[in-house]
Every structure is written in C-alpha cells, then in structure tokens.
Image (cartoon, rainbow, N blue to C red; front, side):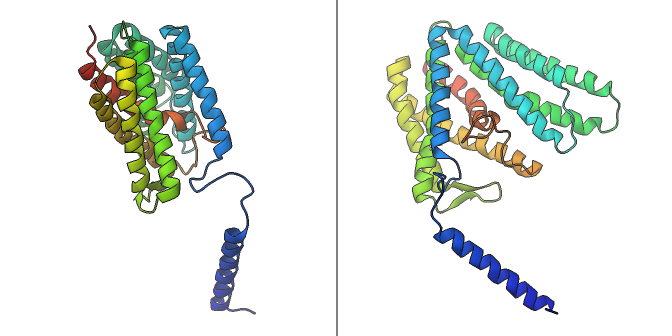
Length: 301
C-alpha cells in the first residue's frame, strides 16, 4: 500500500504534468489572458452599442425604456445570485421600485429619486415582514443593497437623460468614457498587466490595466466633451479620470459580491460578458459622478 507522503508526491507530480500540458497545448478558442471570449464579447458589445445609439436617435423616452429594462433585469440577476445563499429579496416591490425610481428621476429629478427610494425600502420591509420574522434582518439588508445598487445609482442616468437641451448628448459622453475604461483596461492589462490591483477580489485586474483605463477614459472625455457637449477638452479629461476610477470601483464592488456568493458571473445573458449586471456594474457607479461633474462643467440652462 502507498503511504501518505508517497501519495501526496504522486498527486503533486500529476498536477505539475497537467499544468505543463495545459501550458504547451494551443488555445482552442480566442479566450486570451483576461479570460473572456473576445469574439463573442466584441459582437455583443457592438449589438449593445447599436441598441443604445438607435434608441437615443429615436428619442430620450425610448432610451429611458432601455434604462428601465436593463437596470430592472440587472437587479433581478443580483437578486437571483443572492438567493443562492438563502437570502430573499421580494421581487414585486423591488421591480415596482425600480420603475418608480428610474421614471420619477427622469420626470422630477433628484428629490423624486430619493423619495421613491425611501418608498421602495418601506415596500420591501412590509412585504418581507409579512412573510415572517425569521431571517428578516438578513433579507432586508440584501434587499436594501439591491435597491441601492444598481437601481438607485441607475437613477442618475435618468437625470442626465432628462436635461432639457442636451440630455441625450450627456448620456453619449457618460457611456463613452465608461466603456473606454473597460477597453483601455483590457487592452493594456492583457499585454502589460503584471501587478495585481486587488488579488483577493479580482486577480486579473492590474495596476497597468488601471493606467490603461485612465488614459483611454481621459482621451475619450477630452475628445467627446468639446465635440458633443461644447465643453473644454480638459473638463472631458477630468471626467474621464473620474469615470475610470468609478468604473474600476464598480468592477471591484461586483467582484467582491460574486466572491462572497461563490459565483463567477451574475448570469449568462451576454456571451463573452456574463450577465447584464456584469456590464452595468461600472456604469451605475460612474453615473452619479458623471451627473455631478457634467452639471458643473456644462450647467443646465
């Protein structure tokens, strides 16, 4: 019979051999260092870009429908992921609150967003307590998280959209600087990434990738701000730096949630990306930053 030390050595040798085979074997699909199917990711990204551009051309309210559907679906994905740990987020008041917050923010602004957020929390509280008190505190904490992230934060996109003269243009700049954070971080991180930013949360996110995000966002902001909103290039560059920081923070927030829940993605709706919430994670964190900075740089007349 093989004793324990010999068995352990055999297991280590087998694991080393398997690693060597994996390193020598050619890649079967275009899934590079950052761990995503690049072709699928690009294809889905182009489809999403077409949806955004098309609805913005149609009108602000057409894009508002996209915002409501996307944020509501992202909240549903987060709710479903949280349920894997036995926590219950009441669905009906959550979705009603999502529609209420996003639409009221568009129609009535920040005060309406805050009021509807409060009403949503009350609705979640009443609905959950009606089912019993066992585990209610835990469930209500999870419910408040989903109501805030992504729904309440998504309300700032509705407020940008509601600007009377240039709401759609604000959305274009906001989305551009946020999307270029992912593009710049991915491109630079894949090639040069060597120093992990937060290895316990997201091992593949590097400081080099973050520098790429900042550079790409600053360039996107510096170009789009004067062209789309008539602002100064340096204002756009500052917006880009803030967007890169917010987008990275949003990625890390979602990574911490997924790590705690023991899941890789929030869903599988978008090939090459994961769930819709995996795309919204950075957008909803950047939205309040972009809303505030654009109010300063390009005041609403």
